[in-house]
Image (cartoon, rainbow, N blue to C red; front, top):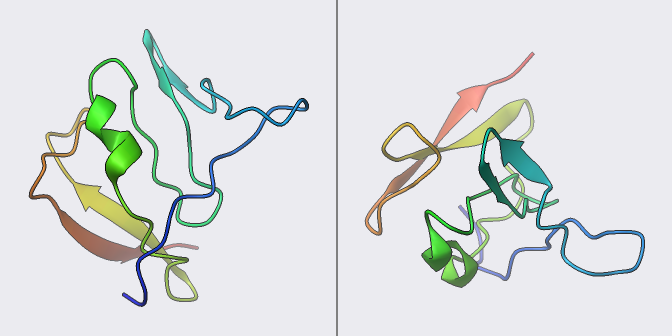
Amino acid sequence: MGEQREHQWERTDRGAVNDFAHEIANHNGPRCTVCGFFFCENCYPQGWQRTCPGPPPEGMAWDWVGDGAGHPPEDDELETYRVG
């Protein structure tokens, strides 16, 4: 997976973290521009403490194994899947 680092959150035009970068129904929160991780700030506030695995391998995307609703558990696993 590479070195662990802080997420690079998508920003607004004013430079603040975009709290609506990820928005589905009444769930919203930031999204990392490097790895694509996103979370609902209300349902999963622990998301702020997660580390960024970096960009996925070429032709792949990261997939966080969680509860299926965008709320990964503390001991979740990181997998990849092919894109394109």
